[in-house]
Length: 126
Image (tube, rainbow, N blue to C red):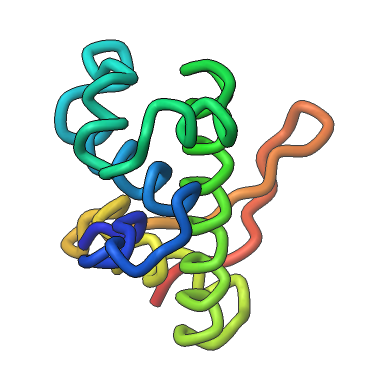
């Protein structure tokens, strides 16, 4: 499950969103460093001037991409916690939903809180 995927067809989006969605796909597929601005411009279908109006540098695009990815993931995570009951016990099943925790290990996992140098057991997954 890719909780960070943009919409399938960005052609109807505003130019800045289209650029960001194209960069998202390219960055994930080929890597941030390996993806050049000219490629993002070509695949997003915007003019070079339009690209630089929204993103003056590749660094600006990377920052926007990371903010977009973070916001997208946090929205998904909040929804997943709600779907699983919204309590501390919802944490492990929510993370298992996106593959961050292997389902076979869920029953053995325990949730701990780190505080003042000691680990306090808060809850055990049933």
